[in-house]
Length: 556
Image (cartoon, rainbow, N blue to C red):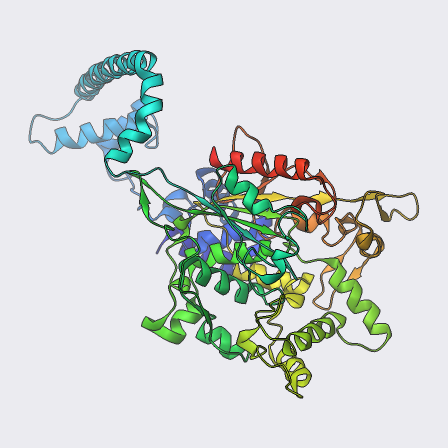
């Protein structure tokens, strides 16, 4: 039985949930989940805490058999003389004792054991001295060579490696837009840039600065799952596969558009002796959920999809590819949903509308059903059959039916606190990937009941949303409590939600110690939801932010 299986057995015997055990051990629920599935092993300190909590020994939880010395008088004698069996010296004495006793020589004495131990220590000491001296000589040579030839080596190393066919790894930055957004290749981008705030082409600027950057377009109203599938197909130059199990559960087509040319053609290719070309996934707003899910699927795959299709499963769902991602960066992302969705539903309830969010999504789907996908704005709802339907008298009806039968397979649900909570159950961080989150605040707490009001420099269109979120308290249909801690916001996303997913580990970012597999939470910045992409912000400030961020990632 593995360590994870034993932790699971001990927890269930005590009728403890993963959340309760995590609380008792001061870790996240996800850490407990990783331990029990043997995805990771608890640190030594946590193992001791687990042993103390359940009243078991370290040997019992790690699988080492406990060895009793009650019937071995000679061993008892040695242990009494030299200490406990757990001490390093006692272990050495035990080994020497067994070796001498089994050799057939004369009976062991106390002096014999001491002499054997002394000889072994002297031998080990000589080895350590020789190794230390050899290491010191090597260091002196390396330092001397570096001091003399360092500048030459730095200037010519790239040329030298290139002559050997060894290229330096290039980690492409992949920018993923949020709800209602678009990428570089769409018709609307010729008139207004999403990345750059409508006036400045941020993607072009970053490429000019030497950062390999692409900005694909995924379904602006689609669910995080569907968007992740579309993003993978574009990166690899393949046909979109939404998964057989997922598509059946949500009543839409399994396959979508085909992309003949990969957006990142060298993704995964070997570079250098020990590295490969990876991607840095950057998600703004709902794009944060998209990139988090893609990274999780690449590493862990999907059991449901593999069970449904076997050998015909898309590579996205087979797992084992987490090393293709260098970092995940989220900007103003609703990791735990946005209370704005709950506010809209509460307002709709007054007019006997069960779900205002779903109604709005239905209206948007209906609009998509009346427009050709070749128009300026592409809704990318092929999986629901809502493309090229101009002139269809039943377009609106088809769109409404698509939303109703989708089983919440749309962005509106994933953006709600309840939907985000369900989504977070599917997503796990990858131990080999860096995670960073940037959050913005555009509200100040007022003296009036402690509500948050928007600052004067907030984008005017966000004023009503900032006020609604800054004064709301309530409970979602799923039982999530929206309290005063949710009031500070950026106009669309609550600050508490933008920092990190509640179910995952996090730490405050420090340049000296940037951790993998946990959220490195950056300091809160002043601005609203669009500031980070250049909306209602100067091009100079926007460029400086992105260049600094990308340089930070390149130095990792």
